[in-house]
Amino acid sequence: MWIEVVGWSGSFSILLAYALLSTGRLDARGWPYQLMNVGGALGMATNAWTHGALPSVFNNTIWMAIGLLALLRIGVRRRG
Image (cartoon, rainbow, N blue to C red):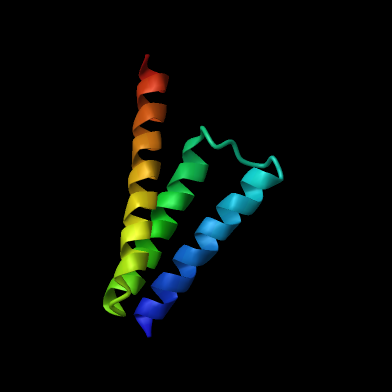
């Protein structure tokens, strides 16, 4: 049961991030958007792993890596 909550929360986070970006309420170069994507992908990958859905695990792991790299760039840009 808890893993379903994790998966649905991840899905909601990614969809909300996309909706907020599309309506101009979030900036893709900002940490809130990227954190929502990283957290959402982590939740969805965790859920997919427990269900043996390896293509979804792969997709969400890559999604998470892209978000983490973006967060790293945001951090470097703020320090520089």
